[in-house]
Image (cartoon, rainbow, N blue to C red; front, side, top):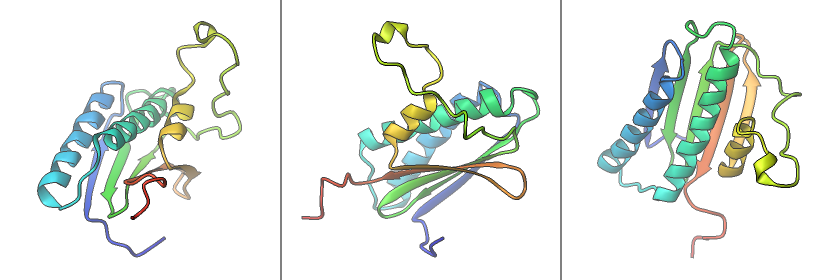
Length: 159
């Protein structure tokens, strides 16, 4: 872990973490972007915001659907959103069932999109939109996800 201090940091807890929580996650991220504009000199491109919001929503939906499948009204989920000069990081922590890394989500089958299921692609979508997505199970038996979105694409350079 680095000792770099974030330009802006927000912590949010959702209890219980239920499907309606996704609206709150979206709203809290929108408030975070407003705080970025008003409290820092940083700016985040709309495209990057949308990609992070989409990825985070997919991860949170999976947490709500799978981690709390056996206890839908008793789960808690926490978000820590941090803005650094070169990236945005979102950590999610939940006390739900362990994510099965071996199972994960299957790769979509080649062929017609009409044959593809409407669910089961959230993790793939999140991975495609982020620069980094890491999962671990903590010593406290919690699921921990770290989503990282760089503020500048590697092709932009610093010219």
